[in-house]
Image (tube, rainbow over all chains, first blue to last red; front, side, top):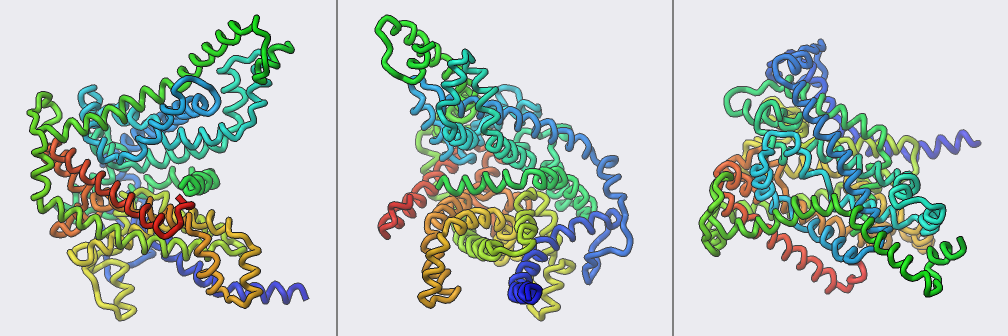
Length: 283
Length: 316
C-alpha cells in the first residue's frame, strides 16, 4: 500500500522533475562547455558541429596557464587582495556596527544615517574622484590601492548592526557587572553571538572582491598587479583585437578563477542565502 | 554591588553617586567613538570626500589625473551634455536594456522559485545548480557565452539549426546584441532573484491557499489571486533595485561587446568609463555621472509615486 502511494507521488512529481532537469541543463551546459573546452589542445578552433565532449582530454592548457602567462602572479594577487579585504571588512564593520547598536554616544544616529545615505550614491559617481585620490596617494599599482577603498562597507555595517540589535541587553549588563571592559564584552560575548552574520559579511566580501573587475581595471595597471579577473579580461580584450583568441586557454583560466568561489559556496551556501534573503527583507 | 546593579539597570541612584556615573558615561562615549572611528574615517575619506570632489570636478575642465589646477568652467560641462548625441544614445540603450532585462529576469526567477518551492526530494540540489551562475564572475561568463553564441560554430546556433530556427548573428548583429546580453544576464542573475522570491513565497500563509482551494480555486487561480498579490513587497523590491541595477550596468558590456557592434550596447556607465579613463575628460565624465544619478533618482521617485498612488503606500 505505502509503496504504491510513494510510486503514485513520484509519478505526480514527474512533470516537475522534467522542468527541473530542463532548466538545470540550461544552467549547467555552459559550465560543462567551459570545462571540456579547457581540455582541448591549446589554440584549437571550434569544429562544427560543436563537440561538447572531446575524444581525448588534454591538460596542457592548465600547464601553459602558469608557465606562459604570469597567471600564478594573478592568483597570488587575488588571494592577497581578497583575504585582506575580507579580514578588514569584518573588523571595520563589526566594530562600527557594535558601536552603533550597543554603545550610546552623542551623534550616533546621525552618523549612522550618513552611512546609509552614501549607499544611495552609485559607485560610478565616486569612481573618478576615488581613482584621483588613490592616484594622489601614489597607490596606483599597489596592494593598498586595490584593498583600502573596499575595506569598509555601509551595507555590511547595516547588516551587522541588525544582528547586534537582536541580542538581549542583559548579556551586556551582566558582563559589565562582572567588571568586564567594553572591549572584552565585544570580543568575548557579542562577536561569538553574531557569527552567522559575520560569515554572511565575509562571504559577500569574498565574492565581491574576488569577482570584481572595475576597480582592479583602474588600479592594477601593471601586469604584475593584475588580479585573476583582470588577467582573464585582458586575455579576452587584447586577443580579440589582433588574432583568433586562444579559447581553450581562456576556458582553463576561467575554471581556475571559478574554483575558489565554488569551494566557498559549497561550504557557506546557507550564509549566501541568508544574506540575500535579508537584503530582500530590507526593502 | 547593589548600587552597581541599579546603575546598570538605569534605576534611580542616590545623588552622591552622580559624578561617578557621569564620569562613566563620558568614558562610555569615548569608547563608542573609538568603536566607530575606523569605519567613519574610511567613510569620510573614501565615500564623502569623493562625492563632494566629484561635484567639484563636474564644474571644472579636468583632463588628466596629474593636472591639479583645472580651470573652473561653471555649468559648461552640463550645458554641452545636452547636445551630446552619443551620450543620449547611450542613455537610450541603458533604458532599453533596463526595460528588457528587469521584467524578463523577474518572470524567469519567479517561475524558478515556484518550481523549487515544492517539497520534493533533491530539490536543494537544483536550487544550488540554479545558483551556480550567480557566483561565477562576469569575465568567465563572457568567455563562456561569447563562444556559445559564436555565429558559425556556437552551440546555440547549432541547436537552432536542429530545431529549424533561423541562424542568428547574436553579438555581431547590432539588432540582436542587446537582446543576447539580456539573455546572458537572465541566465547569470535568475538564481539570485529566485532566492529573494523564495523568501517571499515561504511567507505566504498556507491557510490562505487552502481556503482558496476549498473555494474551488485551481492551482493557477491560487497563484494569480492569492500568492502574487501577497508577494507585492518582494515584487516592488525587485523592480526598484532591478531598475537601479539596470541603469548602472557596466561589466557585461565591457567584457562581452565593448559597447558594440556599432555602439548598439554602449550604455551610460560604459560611456562614462571611456570618457574618464580612455579620453581622460574626468570633469565632463563626472558631470555625466551626476546626470545619470539624477535620472536614476527621478525614475525611482516616479516608481514610488506610482506605487503610492495605487494605494500600496504601506509597502514602502
